[in-house]
Image (tube, rainbow, N blue to C red; front, side, top):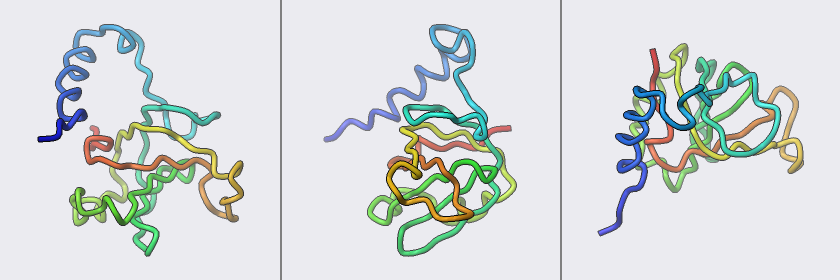
Length: 126
């Protein structure tokens, strides 16, 4: 049986956050419009758009970052909940990619892309 690391790590992170331990001593959470470089990040932002196409499901945060759930992992997510995220505040974690470097950026698209591969990478916040 495979171990689901996100499910193991979530309780440990929650405890560390509440106690202000380690990297949670000062919150590493960035607002979506504060991203300036690719790399691992924990982002916070308001969902400005949710769109589904053959490339998967796309969740846009404040016109700055787009979260992509690829078709091959979409079945792991609650799609009906995701489609109702517009206007909600969320937190996402993962590896942020710069689409302008890869030549994938088209006009009116968010420069930063964070692929989501597990539901634990995205959560609603207050």
